[in-house]
Image (cartoon, rainbow, N blue to C red; front, side, top):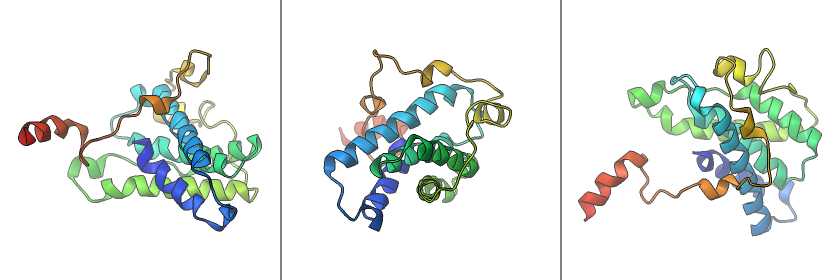
Amino acid sequence: HSCAVIVPALLSMANSSLSSEGISGKAFLTSLAAGIHVTNRIGLAFGLYLDTGWMPTTLFGPFGCVVGCGKLLGFTEKQMLNGFGIAYSYIGGNRKALVEGGFMKRIQPGIASSHGVESTLLALKGITGPKHVFEDTYGFAHLYTGGKMRAEAFRATSKDVLEINNVSLKPYPSCRCTHPVIDAILE
């Protein structure tokens, strides 16, 4: 659900005073594609190994927000790295509200989006974050997946397809597993 986290972050950034010169549609879509690409690559690296109690949207989304918003603002490599470290300091989110049907399940992507925007703004102001967020003793892999990851998901090759090409649109605003039922009822 990368778009649920990244799109609101990009809209807020595009409408902020930081973007006073205006943001072109091309710049917005390029930033969105970059954010989705990174979020989905992180998902490919860790998704299979996450304990079922964690919410992937809230764990992976803030990183995509930093990439998308940072690209929109013309971040340097150093700013992007700090943004990732700051985002890593913010991430969290479990599936308890999903399991129990609580309203927080619907708010969690907004929290992740907010954390991504805050991480971007803090990095823009020069706040530094941890540098080794995915590996290392206290990195993502160690804390969330027992050290397991598909490292090849982080390696770009000339055969790679942008992950935005692997995103589908939901025809109905509900869980994908409900769509066949909705189709059957409509038919």
